[in-house]
Picture: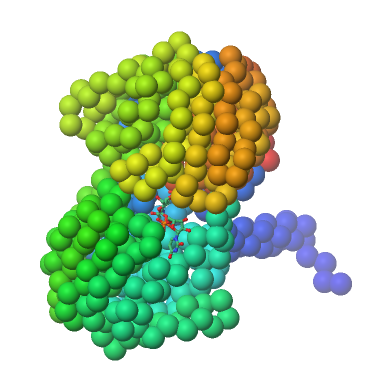
Amino acid sequence: MLCLPLKALLENTLGVLKESFFAFALAGLFPPFACPMDKLVIKGGARLHGEVEISGAKNAALPIMVASLLTSGESVIKRVPDLADVKTMGKLLENLGAAFHYESGTAMIRTERINKHTAPYELVKTMRASVLVIGPLLARTGRAKVSLPGGCAIGARPINLHLMGLKKMGAEITLEEGYVVARAKRLRGAVIYFDIPTVTGTENLMMAASLAAGTTIIENAAKEPEVIDLANALNTMGAKVRGAGESTVEIVGVDSLRPLSYCVIPDRVETGTFMTIAGITGGDILIKNCRAEHNDALITKLKEAGIITGQENSTTVRLKGPRRPSGHDIKTMPYPGFPTDMQAQFMALMSIATGTSIIRETIFENRFMHVAELKRMGADIDIEGSTATVRGVSKLKGADVMATDLRASASLIVAGLVAEGKTTIHRLYHLDRGYERIDEKLRGLGAAVERLRDGR
Ligand code: EPZ
C-alpha cells in the first residue's frame, strides 16, 4: 500500500471532502454559504424595537431573472436578495449558457449564448421556481427540457396549468422520464383560462407570450404584486403586457426584446414576518423600504388582533405590539386575500393570543407542518383537514424544533422570540432560501439570536 506522508494524506482527504461539499452545494442540495446542520438559537422574551430594512422580493426576483432569457445581452437587476434560491436560479441560468454574476444585491446576467435547453432534476428538485424557464426557453429557442418539480413539503404542486397554456400557444409537449420536453417553432397568441389563479403559471405564460406571434389573453390570472413586478420588468424590455394585477392580462407579442435594467419590489412576506414579530413580542418596530399596501389583508388582521400600525410614509410602516394579541380567524386566499405565505407566522402569533382562532389553509394541501413543532413549544392546536383550531395559551416554552419548509421556519422564529427560555431551530437551510440575513436583522432589533455553524 503506497504510504503517503500523513500531511499529504490529510490534505488529500480534506480536498475530497471540500469538493464533495461544494458538489452538493452546486447541485443546489444546500446553499454553499449554509450547512444543513446550521441552527438558530433564540433566547426568547425581548420586546423588539428599532428599525429593520426589507430586502428585495424573492418571488419577484426569481421570475425577473428568468425574463433575461427572452433577450440577448446583459441584463442588470437590482435589489435581488442574497438567498439560496437566487444562487440556485443563477446556476440554472448558467446551465443554459448564460453568464451570471451577483454582487451586493445586483444580479448581472449575460444571455448572448443560450445554447442549452435542459433544467436538470438536481436543481429543479431543490427549487420549484425552476419551472419558470419553460416558457422563456420555448419563446427564445423553440426547445425546453425541464424536470418535473415533483412534490414538495407543502403539497403536490403540479404544473398542469402551465403546460395547458403552452399547448394552447402551439407547443408540443411530452413527458419523458420525469422531464417535460417542449418544442415550438414559434408560439402563437391564444386565450387561456386558469381554473386556479396560479402565480408562476401566470408568470410563465406572460413571458412566453411576450415573444409569441399575436395576442394572448390570460383569464383568471394571479394578481400578486410579484406578477405585476414581472409585467413591469417585461414592459421595460419592450414587451406589451397590459392588465397585470387584474383577472385578465393581455400580452401583445413582439419580435424581440431588449435587455433588462430593473429594480425589484420589496419582499412582502419578509415585511409581514417582521410585522408579526412586532405583534408577538409587544415591540415597537419601524419597517423601512417596504410597500405596506402589499400587506393590506395581513394588516387588517393584525389591527383586529390589537397591533397598532401607522404608515410613516410610502415606504415605512411602524408597528407596536400589545401586551397580548387577541385571537382572530383567517382563511388563506389568492391575492389580495390573506397570503398563504403568512399563514404559519400568523398561527404562531395566534398561539399566544387570548381566545381561540380558526385558521383555514385553502391554497396548499400540506401547509401545517409547523403545527407539530409549535405544539412542542406548548401551543394548543388541533388540525382537522385544512383547518387548524388554535387555542391561545399564556406562554410558550423554548425547545429544540425542526424547520420543515421556508415559511414554517419563519413561524418557529416568531414563536421562539416570545417563548420562555431557549429555542433551537434545526435545518436552517430552509430559512436561508427566503430570508436574507434574518439573524443579523433580528439582532439589530434587540433579539438574542445566534446562528451556530455546522456541528457547533
Ligand atoms: C407561488 O408558488 C410562490 N412561489 C409561493 O411562495 C406561494 O406560496 C404561491 O405562489 C401561492 O401564493 C413563487 O412565486 C416562486 P401557485 P406557485 O401556482 O406559483 C395549484 C414561498 O414560500 N396549481 O399559485 O407554485 C397549486 O398546487 C413560496 O415563497 C395547480 O393545480 O403557486 C396550488 O394549490 C411557497 N396546477 C395552487 O394552484 C398548476 O399548474 C396555487 O399554486 C399550478 C398550480
